Length: 171
Image (cartoon, rainbow, N blue to C red; front, side, top):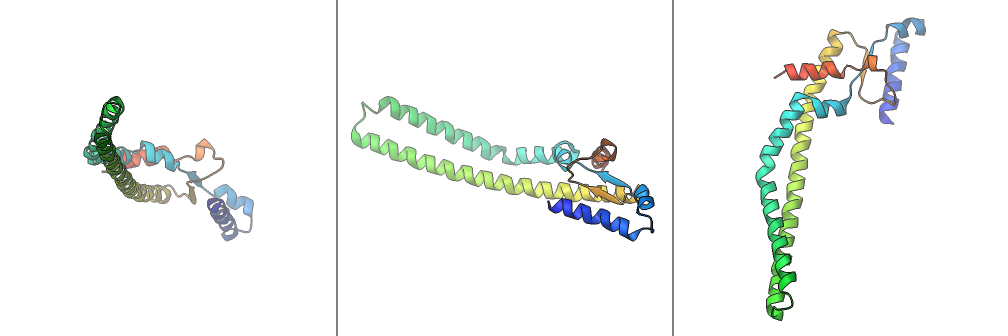
């Protein structure tokens, strides 16, 4: 809703600042649209960031998988041998399983938080670069307004492909 009002205000301002004829001004107004989600998915910098994050977090993911396997093994042994184990052995194994499970959950939470933090940092960097490219396109092609959110947009207004190409060319 915030975007709607800001877009409405920008269009109204463009009409108000122009000549005395709003119809003549509307004919000269150049509007573009970019699909931010598509830039996030398909741009070269987004793909590089995704690979970087995958590489950075791979060791931690492998450790989580190893611990998950360890938990499943202990659970399986406990279920299989529960009837033949002494009460103290069973209680010891259950406590060990509980400790390992809590440790696993702590590591998993930490992993998720760190991954989300790094992903947000990478997205911030991507959108800073994308905004510079969009501003360059807007200035060079004399756009009056470029939107990121819209309920409806005509495909002829969509400049996302140009932004993706510019981001791929920028290194």
